[in-house]
Length: 115
Image: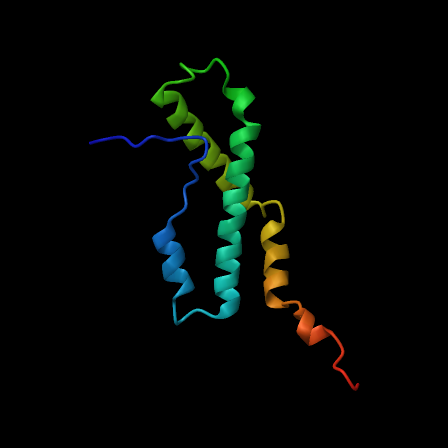
């Protein structure tokens, strides 16, 4: 069994689950929007935590080892899941609001000639 490299830019996201949800016929647009926006926030939280937690892991294991990267990856994943369960940073809800009420395009919002 070959272990894959885990880098600081690696963010776990099940793209097959995401595609399945987006193309699901039995889900409403609101449910799809909620799912996708939560996934987006999850990615943002993980990216933020990757950088924010770097100083915390200094001196733990050999910093260039696979064990160190794996431990950091699992720790960051667990922490980001906990943050998401607690409501996250609020990005998901703002994104859902924006997607539910799309802004008019400039053509739609500009007055027509002769009006």
